[in-house]
Amino acid sequence: MTDATDSIAGTDPDRAGFTVALSAARDQLVLAAGIIADTVIDLAGVIGRHVLAQLLPRRRARTKDRIVKRAISKYNARGPAIDRATYKATISINMLTTDP
Image (cartoon, rainbow, N blue to C red; front, side, top):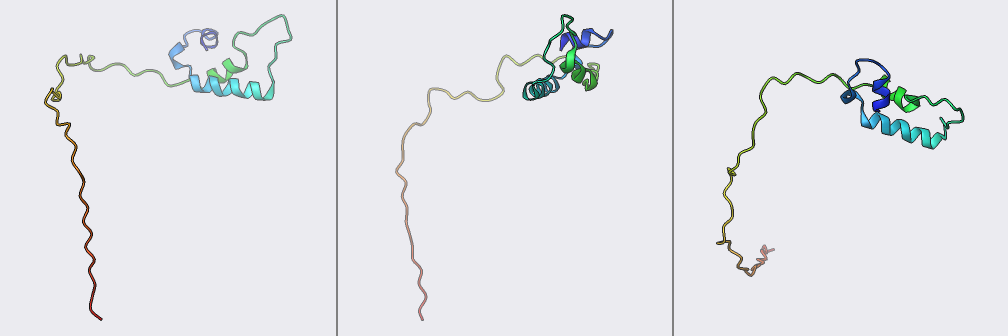
């Protein structure tokens, strides 16, 4: 993917889609196409051409600073006083009948 994006000047490697490359590689394996028989190797190749044809959009500019995660959790931690007692489940069945 990097070889494909490097073949065109000014193309950001972050725009190359992995899923596009993966599906192109899978198609090449299934079809047994693109087998290299020449001494000259095209670095972009069929997979690279698929990646270049379907580049992802440019990254948006960051408008806000990154937020640092809190060191202290805002949720209460479960202390050593966890109720681990088991309780028996009681089931009662009431049959309601109507008089004929």
